[in-house]
Amino acid sequence: MNALNVAETMQLLGLQARQASSAMARASTAARNEALRELARLLRANTEALQTDNARDLERARAAGLAEPMVDRLKLTPKILETCAQGCEQLAAMADIIGDIVGLKQQPSGIRVGQMRVPIGVFGMIYESRPNVTIEAASLSIKSGNACILRGGSEAIDSNKALAALVRQALAAAGLPQEAVQLVPTTDRAAVGQLITMPQYVDVIIPRGGKGLIERISAEAKVPVIKHLDGNCHTYVDDPCDLDMAVKVVDNAKTQKYSPCNATESLLVARSVAQAFLPLMGAIFAAKGVEMRCDAPAAAILGAASLPATAVVVAAQESDWFEEYLAPVISIKLVDGLDEAIAHINRYSSHHTDAILTRDHMHAQRFLREVDSASVMVNASTRFADGFEFGLGAEIGISTDKFHARGPVGIEGLTSLKWVVLGEGETRS
Image (cartoon, rainbow, N blue to C red; front, side, top):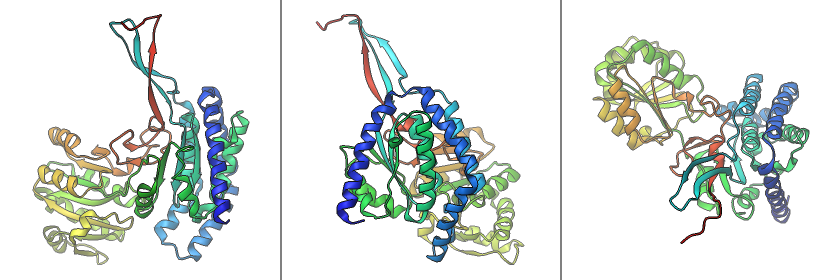
């Protein structure tokens, strides 16, 4: 597709999305929920066919030498598709917030003033690798009464086209415009440049992918962007803590899956519990092939422990405290206590998700208040920082911005508030 055709295609998608957004904003709750339930049914009914399309993407990715963590993100397993279907059903079962009026107050003049929740309008979603994002974005768009334009990565084009076709079927079955969810049909990168510079059609852009992609979008977009650049997530093992719980949670936070942005990348350990905790944790990491990049005190404790021969313990560099590995690698540092842990996290964290494992209620409360991240957790794995796990039905992404939306972005993050005034003929004196 040449540059002229890309521009014409994107203009058409934008125009159709803007027109569809009006229909979606006035669509009934019942119709939007019907579309979501039908989409769940279609996903289950077409699981085998979807895996056939997905297999073509996986074959191309491996032939192109794509790194294994990226290949892993491409997979549409039956479990992933079932999670998508459940997310659609969870959204359908949730109360509709569109049209809600909050904070209605009587003023001395007699008027009543409040705010009504309304759809944003049209959002553009630019994402890499994970084709399940197509369903997450589409389902949230439908529930929130928006229209969206989706631009997935070229490595997942067959999977995304197959999923988008099911979304269109579900919309049509519910009597809603199929153009409410549109997939950019070309892998030409010029389409991204067009999508992020169409403020007449697109109200917000949501990039979801590597740091390079998100930095480019943020720099070049002419419409607002909801984003996070990376996920350097921390888990801090406090004194006092339940050692068995701490080992279990840190293991899950790091090794349950290496590629997501909510996997723990940096482990902080209170110096006073390190002798008891680190050998236990180090043995698990060694058994699972996780490389440990440690400061000198942590390395000394692990070096003196009876770890399996597979253990890889190396000296951490300053850059490791900032790093998002997305791989079986973790940085480990000993800290004097809560104050140093909080200071370290606020300096090096990407402000995505950070957790404390503690039995001290006051320490937990201080951590929640003082750690400046989008999601802050007590005695839980950072892997829970996810829209589905938070009960949002699905997420459009995770925002580390502080305006409008922060953390997992669900229905509310795709809406806005407008002021409404209710009167009975009042005039201003």
